[in-house]
Every structure is written in structure tokens, then in C-alpha cells.
Length: 493
Image (cartoon, rainbow, N blue to C red; front, side, top):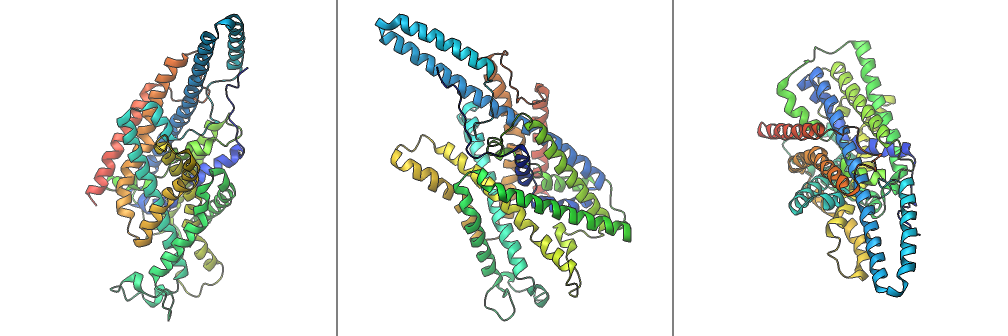
């Protein structure tokens, strides 16, 4: 009797925790730029665009889930074929025991059939990274293109996260400096002292914050996503509270002071900027394998993903619309609209000021380990099989790859804060590919291969509800349009 499938997860969590992980991964500081972008592009046009973005990203997330299950099915099929070939070899090598081997083989085949009829090929228990799926379904050119896009995007994300957290912490620490040097704009801002009559500069405070951030969150990259479970839950509570505070203040402001001005409803000139701000708004595809595998009950995974996207889209729209009507002038970072203007406000408003100022720190700190772990896992997949010396394989896997994932972003952002333009350029194109192109091509090839190997008799219970090829064509056309919009955004500056 053979054990055909034995995925074991020693560190697992409930579906609700998985829902929180996905929510934390998608919702970042990009949400805080939406109110000002909504104001520029028009709140009706922006609402329509972001709803479409949420829907299409939800579609492609189901493509990724289906591709993961297909990859597991192919792996299991290959394992069965290998066992059958081994049985045939043993049968021919032991000619004196042909009859016994035949009987055993027949019994094994019957056992396999019974087991396969009761348990599906298609599973989500195995953590099959997107790099592994690319290795299964893509040719050499496709795999190269995939890894270029994937690694560029993840390194870019980690660089932005590192710089944004360090700068946010610096601004909180050096907050009292702003008023003292508000008129001294011509000086090098980073060279100014962080506190009056102190030698510590703002650049020193930035670098200290960056190193502290790396020391506190870097160790999580040496483990699995499950190890960040409590950070994810705590951060989710923080995010919900922060969003509710901003939405509540905006609603109260609208009712007490009335809507501010008449914001435009439709402005197509702001459409490229709107897309540029929303390109990452629903991104979670790159880390879905790491987030889904530890979930205990995966029977309702598609329902949970749909609820996640629905909640996130609702929060985005509610946050942006209330901001558009509550404030006459919207800052690029929405939290800046809630900072008390008077220095005499030392009570509740002062607490809100610091709370919202630290919002990007907690938001990005929860996503950083997840993305870094995803990068680490895919780097391992990229270089697997190229490291021959087994005595060093464990060290390389547990030490070198985690350091390779987090060191470059930390080193780059230590010496410069100005990584946004470079990363936004490469990340926008790579991000569009990861969110739209790659899932569409993956699911098309996965369906084709699984049908050839397994036929139509074994149904993938994790298949996407969007089974028609027209959905794949639609996503590819949409992705092409997105790339054109990104190009327009950069060309017009």
C-alpha cells in the first residue's frame, strides 16, 4: 500500500486568519493616496474604475488558485507514474517472482484506484510558489520573463516599504523640527538637526529607523509566513481602526460643515494618474501560495477571497469619497489632512495625529515579512538544482536566501531615500504582468496540461468560476490597456 499524498502543515491557521493575511497584504499606504487621486480624476469615474479593478483582480486571483491546484495534481500524477515504472522494473528484474509481483501490482492498482476515487488530485495543501508553477508550465523564455518581472517587482516593493517606514518614523521623531525650520527651505533638509540644539541630523534619524526596522522584522524572513500570524492580526485591528477613524472624522466634518466645494465627477485627464495609484491596490497574487497553504479549511477559499476583495473595495471607495467631500484641499497622503493645525490641541486630536502618522509604519511592517518570504521562496526555486554540495544546502536555504531577499532593499534605502521613481517605473510594468498577464497565461496552460494528463473525469474543485476562454482573452486585453495607461502616466510626467 502506497501513501500517495501526505501534505502535513505543522503550523496552520483558520480561514479567518488567512482572510486577515490577504487583507493586510493588499491594503497598504497606496490606499492613502486614493482620496487626492479621486479628486483629480472625478469621484464617479474613479469609483467605476476601482470597482472594475477589484473585480478583474479577483478574477485573476482565482486563476492563481486554480493553477496551484493544477500544479499539485500534475506533481501527484508524475509521482504515480514514477511508482508504476518502478514496479515494472522490479517485476522484470525478478523473473522468478513475476506472479507474486503481478498480484501485488494488481492489488496496489486497486488500492490506488480506491484512494484516488476518494481523494482528488487537486489540492492546495502544498506550497507551490509562482516560480514553481512557471517552471512547470512555461518554456525557457517564459520562465526568464517571469523571474525578471517577479524579482523586480518584489525587490521594488521591499525597497519602497523600507524607505516609507523609515521616513515615517523619522517624521514622527523629528516632528517638532518642522516649525523651527519651515522658512529654511533652501538648506539640505536631511542635514538639518532632528531636534533643536542636537547634533543628530534627520538623515541619521532616518538611517537609525531603517536599521531598527530591519533588525525587528528581518528575522521573520528566516521562518514561514505562519510565524507572522500575531503581527498580522494585530495590524489588521490597527488598520480597521485607522480607516474607521478617518472615515468617521470625514463624515462628521461633512455633516457639521457641509460638503467642501463641488468636486468634479468625471475628469479623463486624471485617468492615467488614477490607474498609476491603483495598480497595486488589489495586488496579492505573488504571495497567495504562501498564504493559502497553511489554511486549515480550504473548501470556501474562493468565497473568502471574494469577501476580501469586496471589503477592501468598499473601504477604498468609502475612504476616498468621504475625503473628497470633506476636504477642500486634499494632501497626497490622506493622513496629513487629519494633523491638527493648532499647536494648542494637545488632547484627543494630538493622539489622533500620532496614531495616523504611524499608520504607514504598522501597515507596511505587516506586509514586509510576507513579501520578503515570498521573494526568498522564489529565489530558492530559481536556484534549486544548481547547488550541488549538499553539506551547504541547508545553510544556503536557511541563511543565504533570506539575506539575499532582504539585504539589497535595506542597503539601497540606507544610502538613498529617492527610490520611488525607479521602483514605480519597473514595478508598474512588472506589477501589471504579475497581476494580469501571468495568472491568465498560467491558468490557460494549467488547464491544457491537466486535461491532457487527467482527462475530464477528475474535476478540479478549486477551479475558477470564470472557466470560459473569453475571460482569459478579456484579462489579456485589459492588461495590455493597463500597460498603455502606465506608459501614458510616465510620458506625461
